[in-house]
Amino acid sequence: PRARQVTWRAARLPRVLLASVALTVLAAVLAVPSLLDSGSDGPPAIAADVGTVDFSFAANGVNAPTGRKPEAAKLWFNDGSWWGALFLPARDAYVIQQFDADARTWIDSGVIIDDRNASRADLLWDGTHLYVISGGTDPRSAKHLALFSRFSYDATSRRYSLDRGFPVRITEAGAETFVLDRDDLGRIWVTYTQDKTVFVTHTRGDDREWLPPYRLPLAEAQSLADDDISSIVAFDGGIGVMWSDQTDGAMYFASLANDA
Image (cartoon, rainbow, N blue to C red; front, side, top):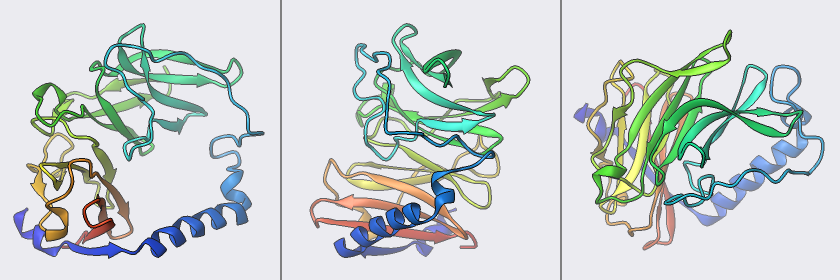
């Protein structure tokens, strides 16, 4: 696995490029009706800019559980319903919940994702499994270590269940964000920053077996500020990691080809 590290390629992203990418994506969404109206095979379109006041997440140690960070993927659509990984004070844990659109309320499935109040989760639903990386934000606390979980869905009972052998411990302590994605080869990747450095890791043929996390072998991915964070995205033929560098006032992106 170490041989792959030297193939990472990094580039500094100009501010103009970041702005143009955001505008291009927005223009594409507005120009293509199919992106706004998903039809019968996707989630229902929102009829108007409305909302409903929902339940409180107030509990000891819980801070903005659906806040704006790279690991903010908390919702997914499956089997005709929206689902969410939401903190439920009554259970003092993050629980898989199903949204009842008619009643405009969430239904507790009883399936706990993480019972640590200070944890944050990033989720990925691939149509077969629900993948979750969950950890706390304290890089000095073993109680905040990152756990990787995999859930399967039973369409008959409309219920998720934790697969045997999970969760799997990924780190020894916490980090400000843990983010995951799945590449074309079926590997699950995770990135985070710790010790002012970008780290990555991925599965090795089995979702229960992971490569020990390693520092991204690029000078640009080191000597970061304490508050810098990273994110990850799979694309056709490879995996990419993006991170901030507040000292340089820049964003960087590094990629690794699947055949590297």
